[in-house]
Image (cartoon, rainbow, N blue to C red; front, top):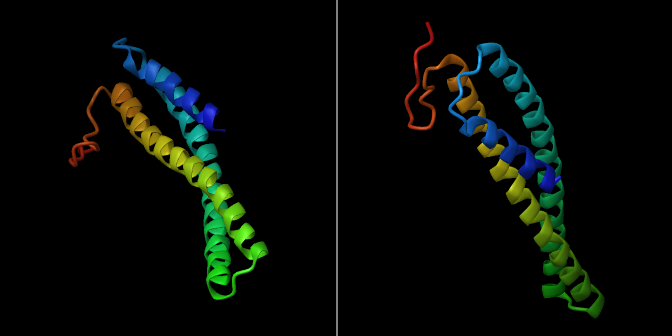
Length: 129
């Protein structure tokens, strides 16, 4: 999933980097597809958030048990959960940041479609007529 989201975002960045004047229908179709992809990645992000939180809670419980009454089994369990938790945190971090970048891509697509800056990045909003 990590490679898919990175490849997709780079693909969209490539489309957005061009200065071509494509018609509004092109951007409408691209925006619809982009919103579908964003929803897929948001779902993936939610699932990984739940898994990451679960592993973090398990790690805290295992660490607490090891602190209260240490046995080699509980110590090993705490270490194994920690080893699994680190990649989950990394993967969630990547998903979170890439989805945030995809939100900005959406804003840029709308700007290209409407040929009017949205102003979301600098804290101002355009008025819709």
